[in-house]
Image (cartoon, rainbow, N blue to C red):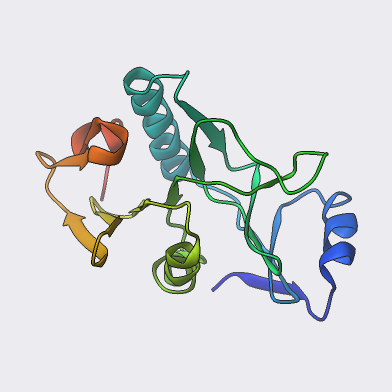
Length: 188
């Protein structure tokens, strides 16, 4: 589980305090949660995904944001996905452009301290955001990815665990070959 560093902080106090911190912190209903550092595998997977998205997506239609940009889930919930895609122009809750309001596709690469949050709490949070059509969770400790997509009758979930699997992202009109997502990753 992630480190909870402070509790009972207002949103405005969090915004002010967060600007002074060296590490990122998510904010969930008054609780501030320190984000873990990333491992080499986490970094490589994220970089591989960036390469795949940049090669496949039309930059006039989509904007790719990295983990430094905070996403507003609700007025009392703010998170830092590893990658966030926006369809069209990015919409921010504030003139300083720190809080993205219209994520379309979010990606989390699991860390040991965030794995449960990524698959449970964050999954529920992302389901509640009307602009999010897909959520991809990529495991850094094994060849495994989960894609959650919004459908007409609710959310659908698919799992990918074979190096020959291809994650079809119809909403983005592209595909992510799992062997390319895990390029240069060695599992022991």
